[in-house]
Length: 386
Image 1: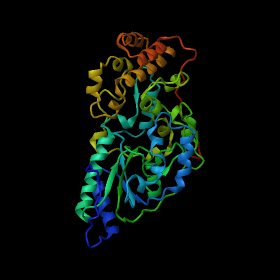
Image 2: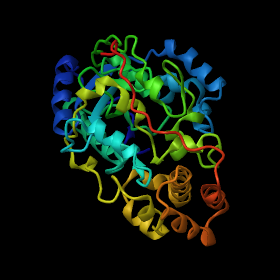
Image 3: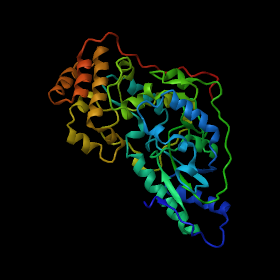
Image 4: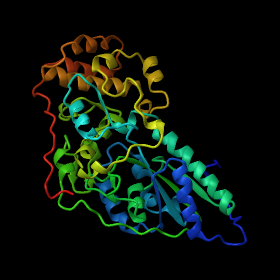
């Protein structure tokens, strides 16, 4: 039994005032770098039909783990027996020092074909490590206050409907791009959860505020947002560059542009992100060499250099083969659009030692394309958007 999955019935004989405990939790969470916490009950029955329909449509792609647990994802007490409440914590991740108008800087990066574009959240330390450690510290503080209790910490690490839980707790609402959205903080934040067997007071849900805005649907390069609140992961660039371990479909490669790890387009287009906060923690500051790096330089990395430069980073999780695959697609898109001829010898240099997967993508990159890669679009914000 891990230290993050402790179950005990040894509560103090005198029941704590859990309303007061929640206030203390908020203060402790702030000290630990969390921006907000909220509490939900565990009745997610209303979400079960949508989850099943999404899985039955195959929108989870090759992420078999999403189907493996079935409806446990919507039943916290089955996933962690004894659970009474879920504490959801928000942690903002825009790097410290991010200037106003940061979205325009990101759009400019997407318009530079010879530059590798990495999703903002992945430019610093692996959020799994940061949130997990601090959720454990939060649980430790709570143990000191109320005595031993049952809990389990999650950070995007198990079959948890985290956006649904955050929505029910009033921390956010589900945006049309399926991400958690807040009027005060946009969507540039991570979520973490503590499943607990304590009867903490539930915080009230909030209304959704997307209105008639469709900026996220309109801007998605691959049209992966097939309907409001419904994403086909098989078309999503974040899935294709991170979760998917096979060949990227030919018809989608031109649409990836220069995105080599993740995609932020739907968040860049969202008008609520004018309220996004910068991180409190230095962990999410961008590492040198990851923001605005040239594809030519990145293609020159050896596997030991990749491992060294991505130590403690979420990027390391995809491994060197997927990293080179993604770079090959980005390099091919630049070449196919008539840019950065220096990428051709850099791509050719990969072939002698390339795995079959990488070699196939490099050959595609070096070929004469049937169609020019899609141009980057800056969305026209609907005036009806917030």
